[in-house]
Amino acid sequence: MSKLSIAIVGLPNVGKSTLFNALLGRQVADASNYPFCTIDPNVGVVEVPDDKLQVLADIVKTTKIVPAIVEFVDIAGLVKGASTGEGLGNKFLTNIRDCDAICHVVRHFSDPSVVKEGSVDPQGDFEVICAELIIKDLESIDKYLDGNKNNAPELKTKKYALAKKLKSGLEQGKLAIHLDLDDDEKILLKEFFLLTAKPYFIVANVDESVYQNFSSFSFLVSNLSSVVPVCAKTEFELSELSDEDKKNYLKELGMEKSGLERVIQKAYETLGLQSFYTAGIKEVRAWTINQGATAPQAAGVIHTDFQHGFIMAEIVSYNDFVDNNGWEGAKTKGLLRHEGKTYIMQPDDIVEFRFNV
Image 1: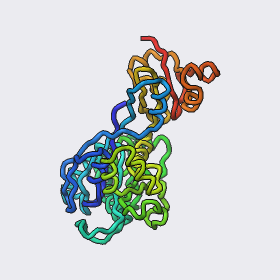
Image 2: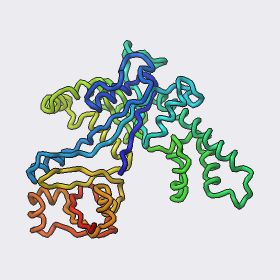
Image 3: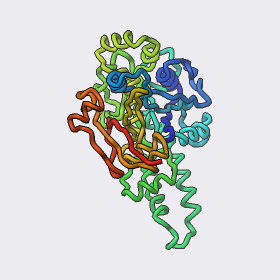
Image 4: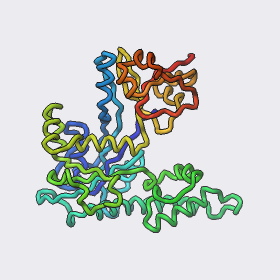
């Protein structure tokens, strides 16, 4: 499947570029304590953390491991009025439109060295960005409605009716992704390419002292499952440590996973992705597919010929593979399954495909 991307979005100087640099483990984007230090978008490919890969590699005795990846795009800071071109807003909104999902970064700490207008207000920051996305989407919907208003009643399609419904919702300050739409409307929604229809999650750039007690924040408590707390500055410092030193430092903080790992995994989840694995002597690899993909579609991710000539998939669950020390042990126990064209791939399936070319 084609590479999917997450736009890192927020007001100027909330820590977007610092987070981006931490994700990549090196200084890529300019990160300074003043607004608009990023103008052009920075793009980076990030490996999806996955402890299962090393376990599988040890079992099949290979040293080559290929993880799944996700692409992050560091978008310059948006300001109030971006939808009308303020602060190069039109350019930045176009950059967001080119991405598949949004990572909203909000600042939840005070630092006198950081130049930022107004007080620390993560809820308000999030609402400012959403308002600009809504205004831009209303422009698109109004343009569509104006272009089709003179059509005869019989030519005013379901898409036209949906546009009116979207306009009503957006004018009430609702994001398109949160509107109550039926299955047909959700399919038509994609044809509008709306900014507010993109899936999203929120990263709260916090002070290290509150890393372990994020639930105490009043900010977005109702959407807590969509919020990932991260101290971007600390995470960048962590990215420069060895794996052992990083593990010890996280242990001191009482954390099993770094903030970056949670961000990457949340991005993967937000994009609606999951992994399946191939495991052999040449390599262990995590392959990326959409949730709900069939076995032939998964085969096509490896090579289109595999999908066209698909016969069946031989599948073992990760737990069965590990518990029985690989393919042969699982097969001996009768745990190897043969699945056909209608099989829906499950997270952590380990697969060998059979096909005609």
